[in-house]
Image (tube, rainbow, N blue to C red; front, side, top):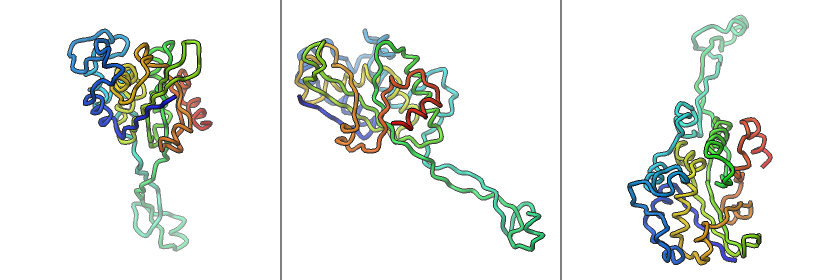
Length: 269
């Protein structure tokens, strides 16, 4: 079994590579069924992907995406920040009001004032495996991503998203004959960009499919049938990719969980 692996440092570099590369040897022979990345009208994948064509998916990945019912959600208004400003009440020789007990005791710090303090926010490394079977609706996947980010709203999220798929000897066999892995690092992207990468079906059904159509070294023709069987990442996989200390979040395992249940599950990972 052989493996093809690519890790991109950002969404922008991933999209640029997708656009610049030509079809690989496997998909070149059936170019008529691959995506037209320059098409402007709606193609046959519109309902399946949630975008009318590849160009729309590419644009959403670059600028970010927020579902209409979440437009006012604070988690999408700014990037996750590594620092926050808090105000603490202190005593000192100068302030806006007297501290009576200290003043009676004759202490020099007998005035109350507020001090601005910069605090480092807690951080978490999350690796989202974009895996969700067909039985889950687009709305379920979206809400799951909202709940995950909401649960971690006061936490700096170092995020990577990945997709892995493989071929098998036969439909009934579980033995893999080849495997491919795509990883995109998203720590510096905006929250809407992170949300697109972890919740929009076009991340998998357009951008990942395009990557599979162009990734060098692809050999197995069975990828033509269904773009492979989507699978799981292991901690061994992440270690090989230089992503130690990341919690692996298989998206479908968090579907229909509330914020408290998500936090509890993340702590166990």
